[in-house]
Length: 161
Image 1 (cartoon, rainbow, N blue to C red):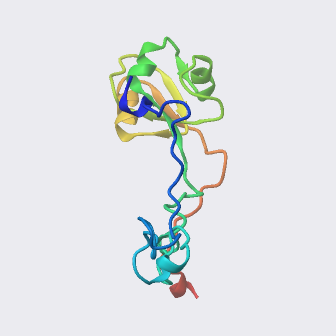
Image 2 (image 1 turned 180 degrees about the horizontal axis):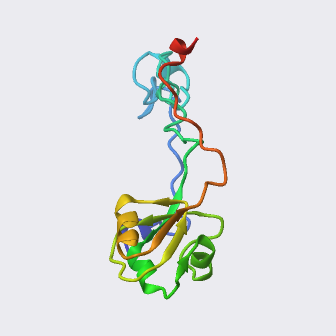
């Protein structure tokens, strides 16, 4: 049994104190509300700050930014490719072996070593991965992205008028 499990014996709950019923006894006159002011006269809603703009309105509603043009790749490292016995590495072959999920763009990264000749077809490569594959005698083929990549903006929009 813990302190929060304690409760009064059945039928022993006392009634709430009725305040503001005259000066005889405790709770008369101001009825525990102090002297004067808005809170003494009526109730004030939760979060009310006396006419000042409340904190929930001062804080911004939305946070952050989601880039609609973000290109997200699934990374596959060289040590993962070395552990497979495939001669030609493609996104379909990686999907069949369970290394990437369906419909994802594949990027080959350079962690690990590759000591056999393989043909790797992917959407993107890191420089170190590209060097390691060609260094082992393999070939690198870049698959075009399945959508148009937005061109980088050339300077300020106001100067292009």
